[in-house]
Amino acid sequence: MYNIVIKDPRACSTELFSALVGFTLRIPVLGFEGFDYYGFVKNTHQLVVRTYLGKDQVIFRFLLNTPIETDRHLDLVSLDLEGVHRPDGIYPPHWYQKLGFYG
Image (cartoon, rainbow, N blue to C red; front, side, top):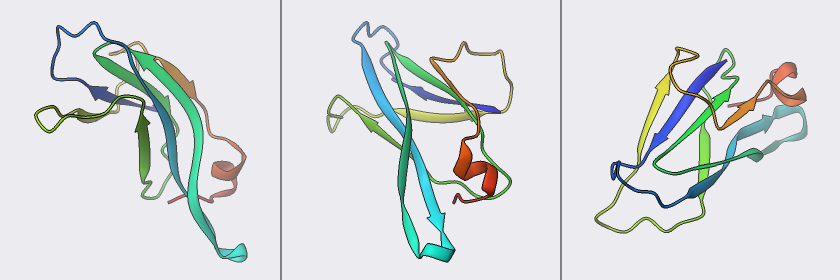
């Protein structure tokens, strides 16, 4: 389990923002490839997702509920240290990941 942190550089922001959390799901025997959205997190200036990353490359997608202006960006940081940030959502491996169907 790893923490993924999405930070709003405007650290003084008190505006809530939220995101759906998903990853690329590939099922070769069915010829399927798409995104599986499996979580939801919300907080003020940073979102922390504790999730299973698997043994291979994983492509995550975070759908935010607020538009990103051209002068504003979010920083995405992957942390391998649990306990540094309190997670807003904890998502253990689900059925597809246990079978090895992921990015």
